[in-house]
Structures are given as structure tokens and as C-alpha cells.
Image (cartoon, rainbow, N blue to C red; front, top):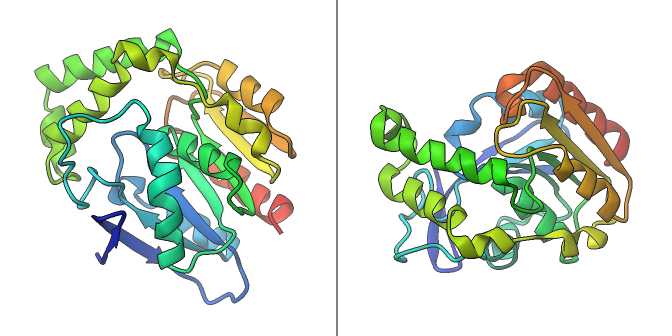
Length: 255
């Protein structure tokens, strides 16, 4: 997998391309413990169904990208990713007016980036975070216990250069009392492009209040998809329904 230096850090990335000229680029932004490889086959399926090319990358501290050097993450880590890492990354790789496809933390990063005024053709978010809910804090506490008592470190170790550091620097910032005030609703009115928000009814990290806040806040057209029998990862829990919703959104809304 190739690497690129962005904001002084080495990041792994991958292109999924098609033979169809003139199609927009999909930029995939992974979840809080995600990486390029943890998207599995979903990006390729979306590339095939839309004719778009796709860019995937692992953020600083994730996957095969450079291990986080700082002793802790800032409570503004998603803002930093959206405003300091993503713009120079897309410029270096010559990506203009992409369609952002974000999951969980990656969904929040996508909305901050678009809401800050960067040119995007569309934003598709899965299990987005707009503010912190008690259900999210409880689930992260449970995840921390699982990391300490199960084989979760070994499973994450298949995808991350330093799984222990990746996990704790994610969990610790979400469980920081200061992070309870984290909120990105001020960015929503800046989103004038079409937006699709998908969430599972069984999402263990957030309620439908997240989607309703997005609907109220964005300036552009907004479509909500609420999936039954689905948890925090729609592209894994309900791949067919998620693929269909994203494909229709890209074809109909993001021309």
C-alpha cells in the first residue's frame, strides 16, 4: 500500500478506480478504531455500483499509518483531522469536489470538513456523531473493559501497527470529562450540498437524536435512512440496504 506525507505524518492510502471518466471521487473516512482494510469489500462494491473511483486512507495513528507520537489525543482531534489533515491530503492527491463517505468519527470529520466551507459534491454519513450522548460513553466504557479482558487486542492487532496505543488514545479522549461538551452542530448550517445520513436502530453508540439534529441543522437537501436490525456499522450489519441507499444517493443527488 502506498504512503503519503501529510501534515508531517506518513499515511497509508489506497485507490479503487474504474474506467468511467468524469465520475466524482468517493473519499472514505473510517471510524474511531478503523483503517483502510477494515472497510473490507464495501468500498469496492460501491465503486462498482456507481462507476466512481474511491480514495481510502488510514488516519494518523491508525492502520499502517504512522503511530501517534503524542501522549494523548486532543478533544479536538476530529476538528484537527478535518481542518488540518484532510485538506492537504486531498490537494496532494488532486481530489477536487469529492463525495465524502464517513462512518462514526469519520462521519463527524466529513461534516466538519464540509461545514467549514470546503467544496464537496455530497456527504454520506453512517452512524454520525454530532454531540456526545450517555449511550456512547457507556458503550466506550464497555469497549475498554472488553479490550482488557478479551481477545480484542489481538483482533485489532491484525489491522493496526500499535493496536494498544490506537485503542487507548481513542477511548481515553472519548471518556475525558472535557469531551462531554464536544459538539459540532455549529458546522451543520455550512453544509449546503446534498447529505445522506444512515443509522441503525440498534446503534449502541448513538440515538436517532443525532440524525434529527443533522436534519434540523443542515442548509442543503437532507435524506435520513433508519435501518432495522442494524447496529453501529451499517455497511457491515446491513450491507445490501446501505449499498442501495448510497448508490441511489450518489446517482440522484450528487450529479
